[in-house]
Image (cartoon, rainbow over all chains, first blue to last red; front, side, top):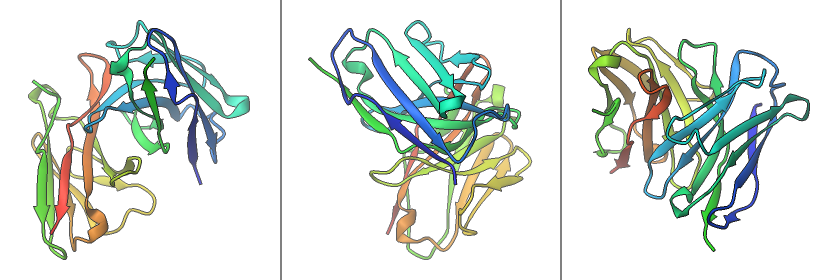
Length: 122
Length: 113
């Protein structure tokens, strides 16, 4: 059974870099049929896609965040990661890792992690 | 104009049926979407992929009470025999090809009376 689990600091200072890792169990991550991504949810509900990365290491980011986002994947460790630089209070959110189904014409989400709340505060 | 539009709230009685709507902007009216359920305090859960034809593929373990249909730019999530555990936020998702990004509707909060 596929499981995705986010880990990382829950408190980040303004202007610093937010770093999260998602550990995948139940999927080898090597299949080109799936991409691995991050989405966040602001207080009050709204969901914002951050980006995704394929097993080959090619990443695709939300243009609104692309100057601050870096994603990487280590399939041998069954992990992929998110780095978001120069954070502000507006980046306080619950961050979800997710699997995107690249076997569909549109690479939409078919499985979610449990999510982790990251607060940006000094 | 948003890519995906959802009503902010809906309500229906226990045991009844409800139809939630996700409307695609005209530029994307042929796209398929996915539906996701988010119960209070939980992560979203993938429910189904829903094509413009009305054909749908559900996620593992999604009850038969959940189905989908389509009409033009509208994509529907139908929940029959409503249960208390169906009280949740429901989001639709698709791809914004113009801005090259995955997008979500604003979500519909479903209350089971």
